[in-house]
Length: 199
Image (cartoon, rainbow, N blue to C red; front, side, top):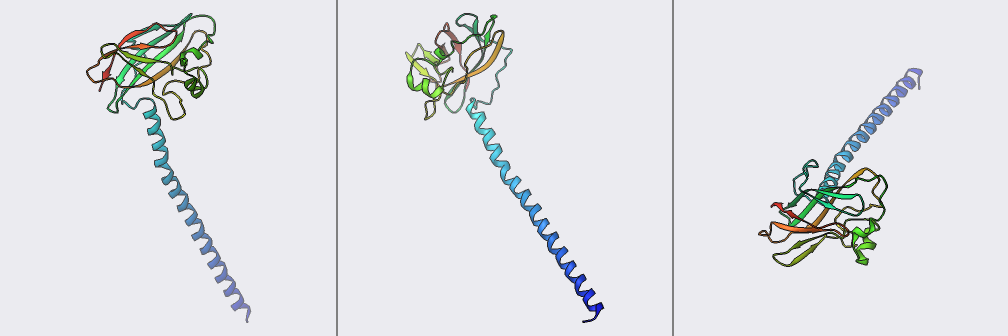
């Protein structure tokens, strides 16, 4: 084989290798794009389920609007911002717990209530012990919970720091639609009558 033929064969081999490498890189690039596109719906679904977990009513609580204030132990108060009935048959209560005093408050475990299964499920301070009382129907509605007895309410409240605020929520089964007023009761807080809106 002459030098010219060897040189031509070498050039052809380099061209084939370069082409194969370009195709391989192109395929890898396309795969990454498809993976990202496939992952996107999963992320949106997670976001949707989180929205449902906080009530799914489509209404956002206005923190500046206080419907009623429940007086709690020591310097603790709970401002209620919204009590909303949604189409799924739930009532979601949103509010803000405030410690207006100069020292940290630690006795939050009592807010979970006395039920051992709920205490174990909540794993500490929570608003799982809250309930809505329908005086007209003589019925009490407790916070919803999952299969592991974790309440559909704010959990993980070991304490409330001095001069601080904490956004909270509680979710209950909805009373009949003709029930528009209920008493909100939480252990160690003074009860208060609230109006259910939405629907």
